[in-house]
Image (cartoon, rainbow, N blue to C red; front, top):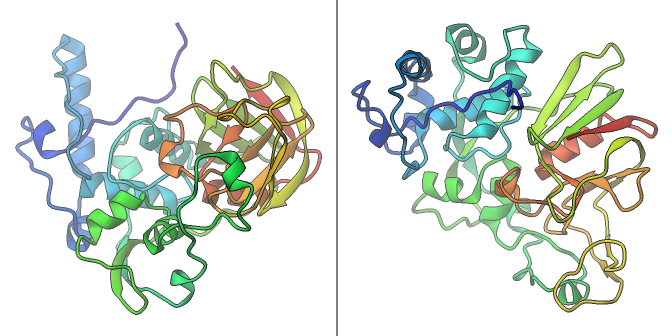
Length: 341
């Protein structure tokens, strides 16, 4: 049996906290900024004790975003330990973020939050804040993005289809989470809304990358083999597996076109001819393409950040657009990429 080095944090919602007598607050600026991560530590300890006697209860799916989980996700993002999208829901991507934070800061790395991790993560600063929608935020919005690649190829730019989508990605948030946090928002210029306060881009020089299909993660190391960043990732699929072995970064292309070739890639709908699809954040490979020496394969962004490590890819390595852009800023031609199965 494959050994895992993280465990999924419990879903700390009203329906899953009877043992601690706690209820999740309604999602709001105040609820997230005042949330205490101590409840996560308490629940992790309770679960660990229950595992000893085999009495860990089944946990239902979370019915709504949780302010505590949202706070944890934002703090991880601010610390350079990506949880992928900020959405207020627990899961493996959150645990990967905790593992990354632990590894980067010299803690025992198991993906489980404890008092030392909380102490190192916490801040007195607000993690969500008011934001006034600007003219730039409402510009370059496009109509719907068709699913058929032939129709996509007729468009000049694959931009965001709504101001909410653009703002969600700008602040590393899931669009449904943004809307839940701003239930009455119209997302118009000059309107004041509430958004997450994510971290700045990590800087560094990446010497090698590991793309780990089994763990759904991309890890980047410096020349001294220290971890610089790690991201939740979608790495291939059963029908379109990622390559094996070690390859090299051949080029970095921001705002790339996407060339669809059914003879080399995959079959999309009834399209049997090569198509050139315009750039934009809703391009099939997102906002950046890191080209690999293995033909047709790369590390890239995605038009669907909420699906990272939840749905399969067509063989490539898929990250959120913001994580892919961050990684692209730290790699150069010749960096090795090893695929771990």
